[in-house]
Length: 194
Image (cartoon, rainbow, N blue to C red):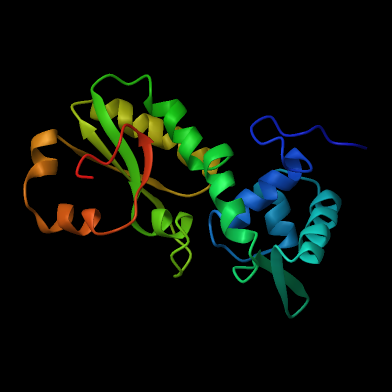
């Protein structure tokens, strides 16, 4: 059975392949094929076939632990970083967060920071356990938390918002200075100190 081309990223072979790549390239996770199939919402056979293609292309790497084959992004392959950037825009948490946050009034800027942003920008390190987002402005906190809960269920990891007013963002605090020194990924508006 042929699968349709993905809606958000027609450059990928199929929507299923794009979903597998999102789960591995954007999260930094190492997963068994059965866990990967479940997270991507694919049949095991489809996931197995697509993983084989991606391993042959060098985009994924694998290792065997006991009876399980674990797959992960191959960060040594020259295609991994550009694919990660395309996926972040086309199918990662950025479009999901943008879609959920855009209708909320009072947001001046929103961006991902912390380890998830660092991995999306190609900074090596441990796989992120969650997604930290900064929302700047005066939005309803309840609406922000509800939006993050919806995205959390889509991306299979906690989404932790921090809401700051413009004044708080421009105050000199250790937290703000730490965020300023790290890579960020814009969702809405721009990182206001750049």
